[in-house]
Length: 321
Image (tube, rainbow, N blue to C red; front, side):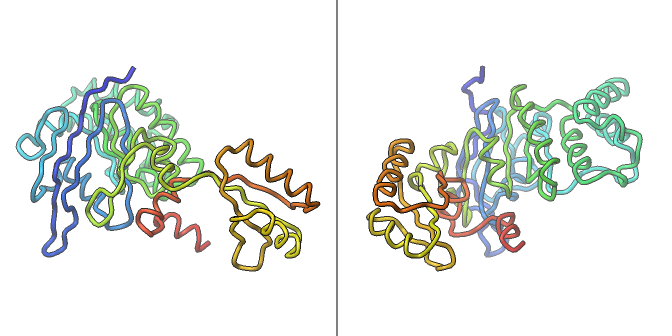
């Protein structure tokens, strides 16, 4: 059972590059054994925040404590309790997977034997045994990311920072990484995640913080944030414009698709089972046939766009294709 103690505390975090204020007083906390997803558009300050928390960058103002250690005044103690998987693989292309893991274990001051044993365990856990003795340059993108995450776990840190760990992975590799991350959470690891994929945050995170313009603009569980967007919607498609017009007149307040290419309308529903049944009965009694129907629930995409007015880079790329 998850304990309710705070592992990461961020208060009033500020950072500027010249006149560009990247962080303008960010506050959040992360409880032990949970995942916090940090979301925001490009340039919002997500990676800057992770770099400050992982002692790679100094803040201009504010405080950060991790497992009771102050990031600014006790960086060495902080580094002993954290692991970091960044946006690019922090591994040696010319070494094998096994050699990368053993080398990192030795850098963490594990004994030679302990480093070898830990490497074997991680190779098994991350399904890399068959590729263990191949140079990293022969690995696929998904294998590289699994190895990078394995490297960050070589010293079994209680806190992990995952900065867009699945960017560029195919759907199957992404699902594999999700399974690994879920297991880390089940084992009690505390995780801070940044991601371009809102479904990832929805699937994995216990809590979500949305930042934009260097400030926290929303926080809560995925369910709480979705509730801010609105209610469920029923989308109905009709075979022709005449049927659509009749349905729109019957269902007062329904929004008709404005592009004119598809004969669809959308109406808000409160009780899915009851309201859908009532709508279908009204249409049936009026002898208006529908071609199809879909119930749409608010998503984190809706939340993100509603709060920031922007799409994530991943969404924008999908729309272009």
